[in-house]
Length: 121
Length: 108
Image 1 (cartoon, rainbow over the protein chains, first blue to last red):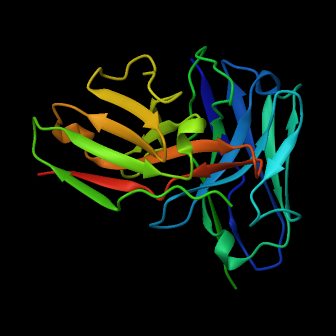
Image 2: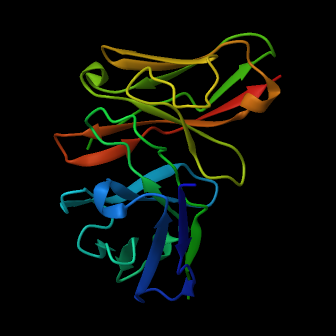
């Protein structure tokens, strides 16, 4: 069974740093596009970052320069390193197997259950 | 940045057809995916690559994309289709993925 499990969410203060993890099973993170998507309370989905199978990374303007996406193939895990956190970063953060811009209907494009990050003083 | 606009809400009676639009500049030149999100749950893809259905998604769900509008159509709507729906594209110009503003579907 393909599964993504996020962890690392916490209540932090503005300016703090945090690292989220997304452990994959039934698929390899290095062979897929992997995204982080967040959802503020009562709001819509916001794409945050993606790491492509080739290693290239992209970021939303709202997190560029503060967040870094990475992966560890030996642990089959994707990370989101978040620095200089702001109250507006408060959200549930989802890890997802990102649908690529080329046709690929192999496997399931699943999401994890999410992890909550709260930024407040 | 690239913007995708959806109607905030759509109401439909059981058994009828719901159409959810996703407007964006020349969206027809992009590939559109659609996600369904029920309360307290992670999103699930119901349509990808404009009009394909992942395994396990009912044939009642269909998609189209042309010009400045992509459309998700739900035929023979059931109570279990009540959810938020989001369109999603890759914008090569900005090198960003983008989600639509989301549409809440209410089954009357």
